[in-house]
Image 1 (spheres, rainbow, N blue to C red):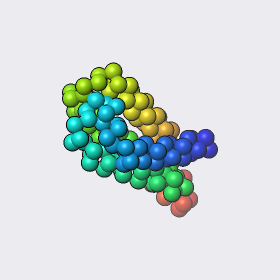
Image 2: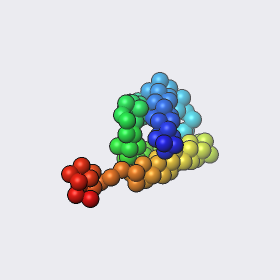
Image 3: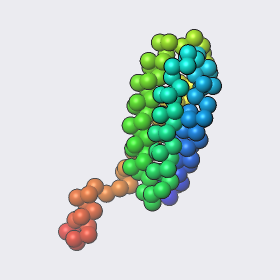
Length: 133
């Protein structure tokens, strides 16, 4: 049960991260040193995606698919951060933000793996229902 509770916490974290991206994209641009104003739309879209991940995780009894979706989002975030890293004017501040994002990504992968291990494959679930196991 602890993994599911942790996943729920990650759902709330998604909503908080997403709200910061939607409501304060210019401040995030400044903190990352890419404050040319061209990235606010991208940050807002990423924020909406993050909020939807959180809602998905919190809305279902099984948060596993939502955590896997967060992992996919982390791949996109990593690619975009890699591009932004070449344009930053504040490398130390950017490195701090990058480290935090990567830390969250590692947690996503750890919990996706742990939650995924708990689930039966669809074949195992069907066999169990039919009494074939």
